[in-house]
Image 1: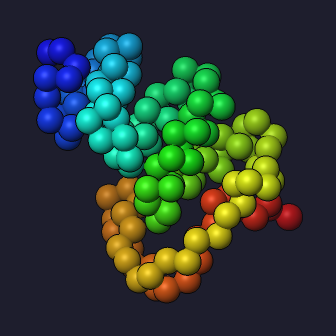
Image 2 (image 1 turned 45 degrees about the vertical axis):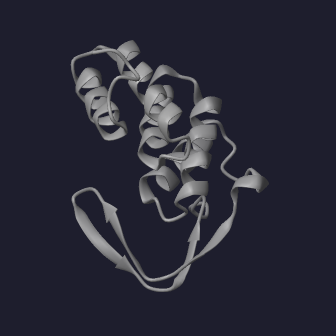
Length: 130
């Protein structure tokens, strides 16, 4: 299957299958194809960031997590992985990333169990453990 010949959701779903089969370069191409169709597609940015993180390209992964969060500030997985990546780089307190977002009540899915978040604030990176 050639990138660009499929709808956006098929690209991201097919990329996930390719990753599970160890066909990582092809998967990356499909994540990128999804972003060509819709540059602010949260799930393509998130999944590409995970792919980049696994490949050791942490700076580019950070850029994609940030882009995902600009599109959806309540995307918990991007927020969590961004914090982990920054911690891996020893830059958890990078000032430009400690952004607070006001969030209206919404459903946030973490793993397979959705949870409600009342109006409040979400942080781009968690506070450091004492």
